[in-house]
Image 1 (spheres, chains in turn red, blue):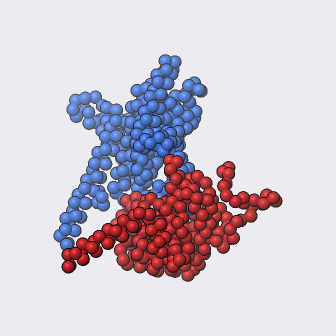
Image 2 (image 1 turned 60 degrees about the vertical axis):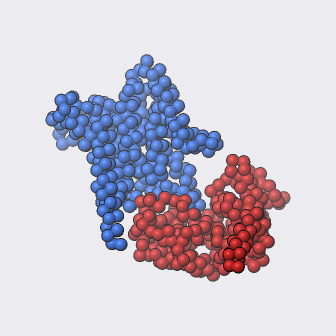
Image 3 (image 1 turned 60 degrees about the horizontal axis):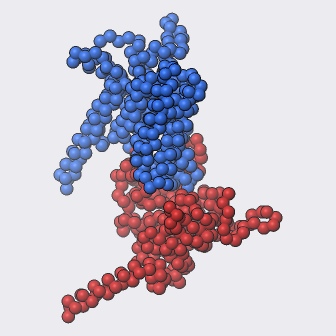
Length: 277
Length: 308
């Protein structure tokens, strides 16, 4: 058994008492992850309130995807623990939905869009049980929800990037989770898909669901999300977008790189000013 | 050409072997680890030899178990070496299976001094001789039928593989397509991976004596790859790969007893011809497949250009 660092979780009676109330969808304590003894995430503490659309923002290599994967037990944790609605994640799998990066699967796999969506139900169907008509119907509904029911029978490589992303979202919808992890759902999608994803996120929020989204486009953060986690190996800041998503904090998160962008921007302005004069 | 009951058995055994290999082969191909089949089919050799040396008998069970264990160990070692040693996965595979294969050959050469276990047989098999080794005789419509041992053991493996894939179809499917999602919904992708490796190892051992290790590799990869070019559905791919495997066995044996005669040679080995037949069928499908064939792709592209 792993010895957990941080505050003790047991009292003298020996019974485990949750340090986080069961209304907190995601509580991360002292999470550290290392690849080949090089730390990728260092001592991450996070409490995510219910019903928020949360953007995880940070430079490349900041550990954004790793944070999601560590929460889902997809990469080993060096230390720390992850509680979902007050209990360890391993006991709450059915409450958690996952949208991996689009490039993480082989789109030439012999499978139709509908069958990919039905995969979201496999956990609930259970071992040895086959996929039934009712499951396919549920998958079809999820496809309708993201507006591509007419493509249900298509082999998945015959879909556009945006449509493929919608298939993944439909699969997450079919999972009918309370807490969603989405790894760059907005990466390389068309404008219509982007709008569809945003309205889907708001729908989930209205149902009291919580979404953690790895997001790259700084320009749309304050428009799409009401909560932000600024990450660069450590949590630089986390909180409501209007409080956390500030110029200073971003500079702190991106280090010199954002400053460099600024300088480049200023330089370009300078050049064009000279040309105009 | 003379066709004897003997020939029928050779084809049946070849077909059973082809089907037994083709089913797990589909998942190997889809997981882009076809060469793992190659590695395991070589690496099980020391397992076979140790099982044999420990029990001193050629009864199948200890050999099966020994080989299955070593087969899974091959996969585990490969994983470890590439993860902890800054060694590429392909190289790790090459290191593990050549070492184990060599060890197996040494053990077998040692053992064959005392008993009849032929290293050459391990590589090329002797499907032509399998009907001589009869395990079971029963009466059917007045005539006596003798069932070769290889047909029984391969039949059991075909049944086992089909049953496993049928029962765990969605688990194999999801853990092949998206192992991370599989893990998050509670399907242990690692367990599924090693289950597949064990399946490949057992299939390899059962097929060894009939067709030899080289043909096992062909049957693991070629029918599955050909089926992949014909369909967009995994279940259909599994079925088609079995059919292509059976066709390869039939064509292979037919070819072995006819083709060399045309050129004035004696008939050649069936297992060798089976692999050739599978390759031939693959080539046909690769060119003419209505979906992903060379010609279909060419014409489709032309059609597209004209439409624009």
